[in-house]
Image 1 (cartoon, protein in one colour):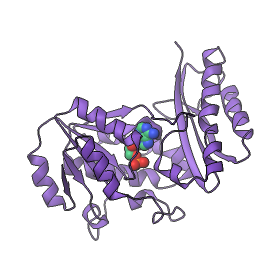
Image 2 (cartoon, helix red, strand yellow):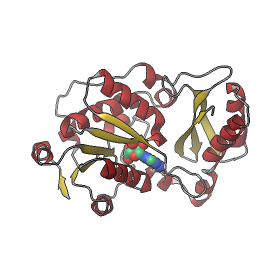
Image 3 (spheres, helix red, strand yellow):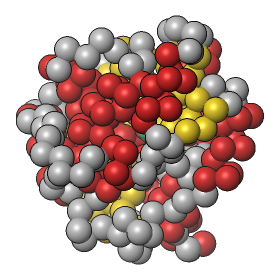
Image 4 (cartoon, rainbow, N blue to C red):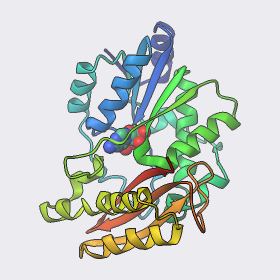
Length: 279
Ligand code: AMP
């Protein structure tokens, strides 16, 4: 496994990789969710590359970029064990050249949900992923369903900018109690960690109710809100029943939907989602 920092070196090593190349972009502090993307890429591609970059432009000034967890030696051990070929660990200046003036903004699908809660977040995400796709020129790039809106934004961006890459979205990896794995889970105290299972519980109760015939979108929102209300440590930012492609909030009866939520647990905000479909 080759690990490089500088862009020129990355380009040289990338040129020597067998194709198709699969890229897994990450912000590091890797867990089994990231590993599942690498494994999928390994199974589908001749070579696999990973980027580890805590992207400053997707954090708002209110969010603590400096406190984002990091452990590069551990990350590299995990990636080596997964058979990754190439890892890029750039500095901010490698990704954002001094004096840069160029941003990628995806309009409609960036607006609601996380876009509303975190203004500018998806501009940072779309910009960095566009740069990563140009730097690596992978045939496929792998993302997690955990960040459902991010996946929709990136797919739209790649299509709109005519970038020749297939965006592959992989299922959310969860703990035994349903909590979606996330680097941010490391911020939770033991008590908060227990409370955090309420997100998946709320999604599961709504999904189960949908499966037994309740298709009214507002009722599904109410069900999720009432499960969350049963957990005193949980403070919902939003609870949504949206169209899985346009991410527009749905009214009336739904045939398929993205159930999603952002919930504060102590000082940490967690997000999660489930897609429901009529069988
Ligand atoms: P991050 O390092 O948090 O930016 O995540 C890098 C990639 O891993 C993104 O595409 C995430 O959606 C994905 N990811 C994060 N957590 C999970 C999880 N629990 N299951 C599957 N994919 C995940």
